[in-house]
Amino acid sequence: MKSLIERPYIHCLLGVLAIATLQGSTASPGLAQSSTTVQPTAQATPTIQETAPHADETLPQRDARLKWWREGKFGMFVHWGIYSTTGGLYKGQKLPNSAEWMMCRGKIPIAEYSEYADQFNPTEFNADEFVGLAKDAGMTYLVITAKHHDGFAMFDSKANPYNVVQATPFKRDIMKELADACAKQNIKFGFYYSQAQDWHHPGGFGNNWDKTLERVPSDVYVMQKAVPEVQQLLTDYGDIGIFWWDTPRKMTKESFDALHSLTKLQANVITNDRLGEDYPGDYKTFERNIPKQGPVGEDWEVCMPISGSWGYKIGDDKFKSSEKLIHNLVDIAHKGGNYLLNVSPTGRGTLLPQATERLKVVGKWMKVNNQSIYGTTASPFEALDWGRCTKKVADGKTTLYLHVFDWPTDGKLLVPGLKNQVQNAKLLANGQALETAASEKGVVISLPPEATDQYASVIVMNVDGVLKVTASLPTLGKSGKLLLTADKAFIHNNEGSQNAAVRTRHGLSHIGLWTDKEAFVEWTFDVQEPGDYNLEAVCSIDAKQGAKLTYGIAGGPTNSAQLKPTGDYNKYRSQTIGTLKLEKAGNVTLRIKPSGEGWNPINLQNVELIRK
Image (cartoon, rainbow, N blue to C red; front, side, top):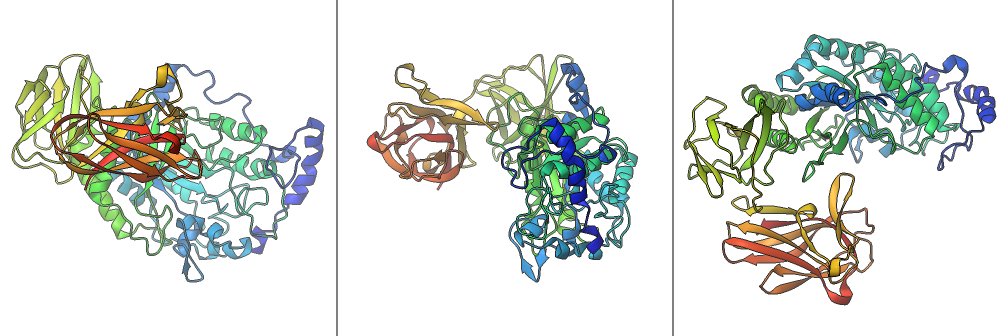
């Protein structure tokens, strides 16, 4: 692999220093390699648009561009590279983190890691079958790692011989085969590209262990490798639905703009929010975890591996159950987002049986219930103890899709707060009509004794006119859990002080700047299941000594609690406040208040009651 390592980077650097000097540019802070910003030679400079993509786009035009993605809801993420040949093992040892990070976690020298390319020969890979698996699972788009942090291109890169066609015995352009297969099967196709981290290039971020690298500024890497590769991906592979950036770093504005402007090569491409801080893209990305509440007024997506590792890792047995996958999909749709579920092909080019089996189960559920996911928007209900809800609005009428996770034993399902006249209700699986009745608390649906699906049974309910839902109290019911979020708290401020207020960071609400010791917060909720409950808090505390508070039900006894420091106001941790005894059913108010001199400011995202 020697020829793939000894690239003429220094010659490129010398060729562009004069241009950089004339322009008077400087590199962004934090670039230890050099303080000089460089531009590529004329021969290496791709055609770059001067204006930002979609800069003049109207709201209707944006809605039209994102229409397929908003309606599709469910996509396949694919992490695949030469690390798959060993399944993340290095010299017989399992390295921490996901397998695609093995080069970094094992501090593997470039020369040694490059030898994995010689072993990469996934002869069992069939693009049509692979895409067919995604389609049968109900997925509407597919995003794959064209280049991850290790710098290896899974396509026939014209800018870099360290790629699947030139450097492996496989010698086939996997991206081209997948692009063609997606086009044939009507699946939107997208690329993941690690634009900043590149552990193979001396100008890429991240490799601080291989001392053989002769460092050059990051702009050299961007202009010499990233820009031409992104341009090729957006030019040579047909219609690209999504370009998925990853792991932003402090690059220069010239580098950011050069990369960002290239997406204009595909007029309808959608991008995520991971290019750079000032480049929000079209939607917000949540990794691994589903937010407690969907960001209001924003498009967003949850990416999550089907197992523990993003890339194929030997011994990874943390596969999510079929039920969990279906519930995740429904929960995310209920909150108004998209689900990008990752799978990990092996070095042979196929998925493990655990993955294919689960995808088939999800596909079986989607075949019956997909209309409750595709084209839906977020639930109008704040909390549903029995499951989740999605909705569609057309011609002044609303259709609600009620996903029942916990089938009621008494045959009665309450849709809380719904005041509209119900036209009809039926089971989606078999069309059986269901009786409904209005009540003070909402609409009650009479159900048959048995659920139609073991994971999530769906009821379709059509109602007249614009949806009318009265606010209902959060309910602590049979699930034994109740999440109380910051944005739903009532904050008692001392004489109108703003020293305890709901604030938002990274799309998540928290009660912050809580410096007033007299300010306290409350949540009122309905208790259906009395008992003893643990009270958990997700919070951040900077002070070394933590924070002392009191808690209890308004009108009842109070308890003291000591929260531990988390080390930083940006580091949130879940910790137990204490135990809460709820002696009877009905409406109660939980109160949390600072405790005298032991109080230090905290950021509080949520508290959760969990039955002991």
